[in-house]
Length: 208
Image 1 (cartoon, rainbow, N blue to C red):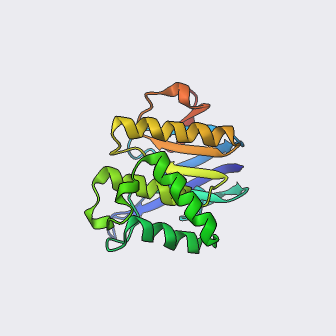
Image 2 (image 1 turned 60 degrees about the vertical axis):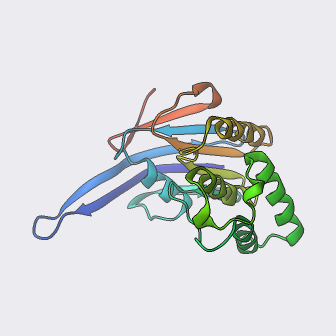
């Protein structure tokens, strides 16, 4: 479903004449098969979010290739929402962007509200949501079009324990349906929920 080979990325830091180059990714290889749940772990600065942005096409790699099959869903670490729109309005807007029919969008919307438990906030504006409910909306937007590959950057930060369990139920259902999920996390406590854990260290994949 997704294959990245030899991914490299370097940033320029500082101000001239003291500018220097910092290598963030140094030849990363990663594969994601159908129906597989994979975790990416690593310390701050190890290149996790940079790699995720390259995988979804939001950032260009300096070297390497990325091959994707099917539709992608992306949940960034920071919520990408419009403060003055309600949850319903966000889902309708994204449904149109995905070229979904009205019926398909409404059906998916109901499933997302039920799966994550925030239907009572359907008419609430984003700037009035709690951090946890905002995280649910952010995840729901990534799920809306039922993507073949779901890429999640710290998706459950801010979730309470009940929502955390609902999240993993949702992931399990996607695995059973042959969908793939890639999750970035600073640490992994429930390793049995993953098929594989990939660790990044100093911009490289290290054996676990």
